Length: 231
Image 1 (tube, rainbow, N blue to C red):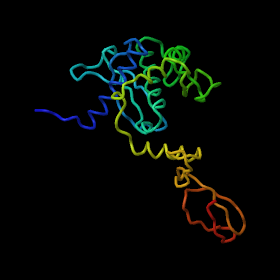
Image 2: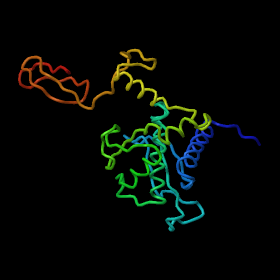
Image 3: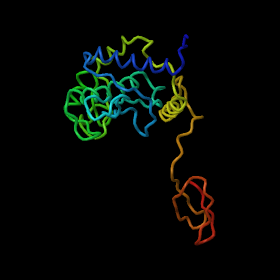
């Protein structure tokens, strides 16, 4: 029986090929096999869950036999290829450290991690820009000009790039372009509204007092019976 290449197989085959490509080109095959995943974890472009999987025919008591999970947030797949695959390589540096190095407390990016990032061509930065701290709890990064990551991405085969993009990712990119004043084609994007706020300011039309609450509330002032208008 022949099985066609489903969207799932196409997406994860490309994902695994990208992992192995960077493993060879940037890590000299030092990274172990992992469980790859696409996960919509809030506020995370990617993450590693170390020692989170075991083979079904083992009890998992031997930690060395467990597998790490490497997840990418599918919402970033509509972004520039540099953003997508620098996220993958960033997480691969975590896999390297859990395999060969000495990780600090969960979430903390230490000096060893920073040095590995720079060795593969990514500069760690707490701001995601030049001048940021290279160690810290929350860490972004940017490519080093002329570095190994950019060269590897330039030579990466097209078939290793994930072929499917989430619709949420499209919307996020459009919003980012709108906030920057440009659309997908470099034109103004006035039709894109920014995300709704959790709380908004209301002002009484009579006594001018202010309150905060959820969007779209209908509020009458208890002092003057005026109407509160959302600002």
